[in-house]
Image 1 (tube, rainbow, N blue to C red):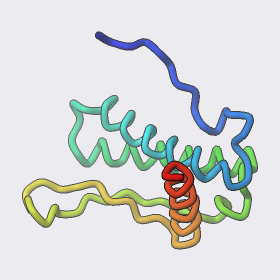
Image 2: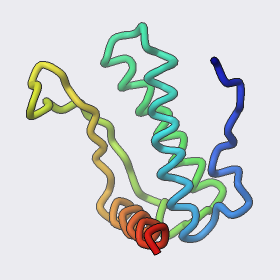
Image 3: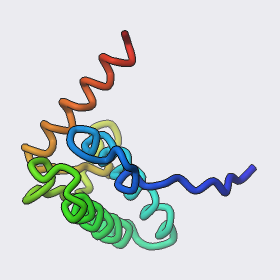
Image 4: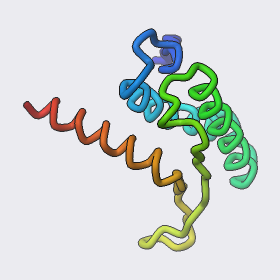
Length: 119
């Protein structure tokens, strides 16, 4: 059964500011990459990667524009790459190269969320 439910983007959520914005961003990031690969599934892998990169750039810019967390997002970057899978070298995997500052902030927030859900 197909669902027609349309999820709102995290950057549209009223709580998307400060540290909360980092969690919303990580959800939006995964969503935007998945959507681009699905939208362009009949295109070459290189084209899908290029379209996903454009979407990631737009998403990051959106978080900067709404000033969700200026210290976290301004001047940061995420670059998508295809890298060989250790187990299956013929099948590349998608790798995200995130600027160190943004990556650390996202990891910190995800770690906090994980410890809260355990308690």
